[in-house]
Amino acid sequence: QVQLVESGGGLVQPGGSLRLSCAASGNIFSLNLMGWYRQAPGKERELVALMYRGGITNYADSVKGRFTASRDNAKNTVYLQMNSLKPEDTATYYCYGRKASQDYWGQGTQVTVSS
Image (cartoon, rainbow, N blue to C red; front, side, top):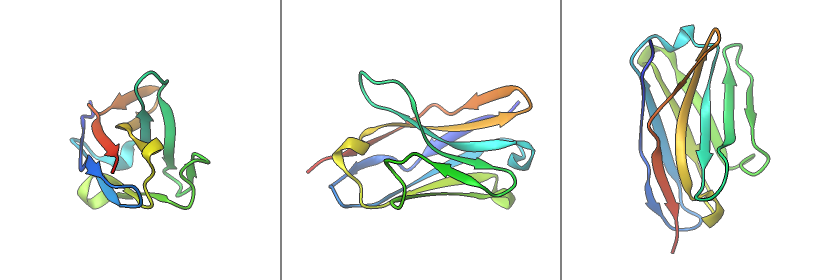
């Protein structure tokens, strides 16, 4: 069993930056995939960034060049560095992990981009 706990959300002005963290209760090295999704009010949950254990990371087109996902296996933590934030980035951000055929989700952290 893996538990994921996000932190780092908040209110930021357009053009600002935030870094989200996701602490895992277990060894994240055993997770084949880790990443971030987000869900805005009235919209479906969408992929933000997905990190494969081999080192490849896929990003949504809407965040390419602005967001960077990373993982620290020694700390069992993954991060999402978000720069040049836009109002349309406002959403609840969820940490995601996959081991074999089992999906794991965090509880979500709110990010609001507004002046």
